[in-house]
Image (cartoon, rainbow, N blue to C red; front, side, top):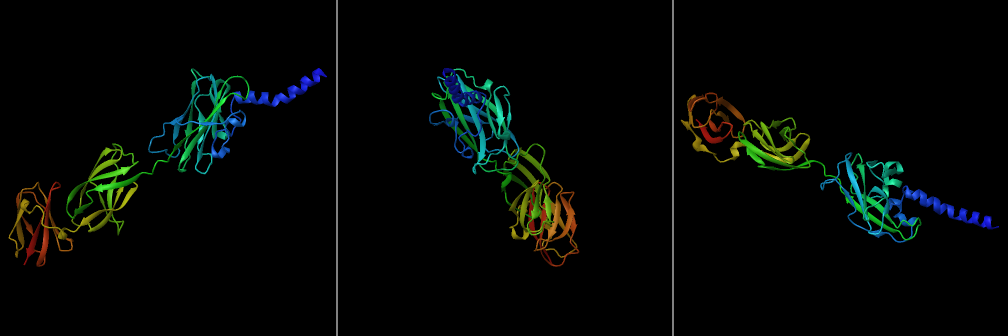
Amino acid sequence: MKYINKFLLLITLMPGILLLIANSSGSPGGRTGSPGDGNQTCTACHSGTAISQSGWISTNIPPEGYTPGATYEVVLNAQHASSSKFGFELTAETAQAQKTGVFSVVQSNRTKLLNQGKAVTHTSGGTAATGGTTSWVMNWTAPASAQGEITFYAAVNASNSNNGTSGDVIYKTSFSVQPMAPAALTAVQPNTAAQGQTVTLTITGTNTGWTGTSPTVQLTLASNPNQTINAQAVTVNSSTQLQAEFNIPLTAAAGTYHLKVNNLQLDNAFTITAVTTLAETNSNRFEVFPNPASGQQVRITHAMNQPKVQITDLNGRLVASEQLFTGKQDINIGGLKPGLYYIVLNDGQHAAVQKLVIR
């Protein structure tokens, strides 16, 4: 009878013994304290109440947020002064309590995967601690598309090494990250220029990642996407700022333009005004004689660097164009009807505008 009682006692204790052996080599799963795990922690097997602890999970995910599909390092730290052994389970979930992303092992002697890579736990060789502290390192690959806020949850067992389920201290901790906002254009200065003007735009973006390779920058007429003006030169100042120089043709349609940098677009960001809507600008840079004019030619005297002269009507339409090579040069106006015009000189650095009356 004595042997039978011992046998029955052994059978009674066997599940607990097996559980202890199993848990020393890793969590049975679903014990991270996350909503998706029913908020269960190691207290499902060990006595006590889980103590909340902040700051035990860290990652190298940048403050701007995670990038879909990118792989990051996750570190779980644990501390309990009297413990020489620790165990853990860690997972990641969306705000809807759905497991997300995929973990991979970095310390194969200390950690292993659970739940098809949706969680990580310790191995039997990964429980040892020094001075009451330990840590585990693992990699986590973000989901292929942004899933909003994602929270890492972990439960930690600070063991008293009595080979039982009592006397241990259980901790739970969490850490949340946001998705990185998509790249976007946010501002452009200045945001207006006149027909015939040369202008340098300072363009600002967010999460754009611009580098030394110059992006393609253009203005597209909002009312007609087939009418575009390409930047003549682009300088990248930083990953989120660049400068683009435009020579706005006198023939450019006046109106509102979208700004495009590669595949990013800032709608209705820029306005080109008709030269007829402007006051005469830098008129002291050149003289027109005679003015009013009634013959076939007028003489232009200027102090600019071989500017291009363009004549527009009151609607901003180009009616004549000629290159000036000397500081005093005659241009032909014989084909123009009597009326009021604007004559514009532009040498790529400066633009000057005057009225021209033809009788």
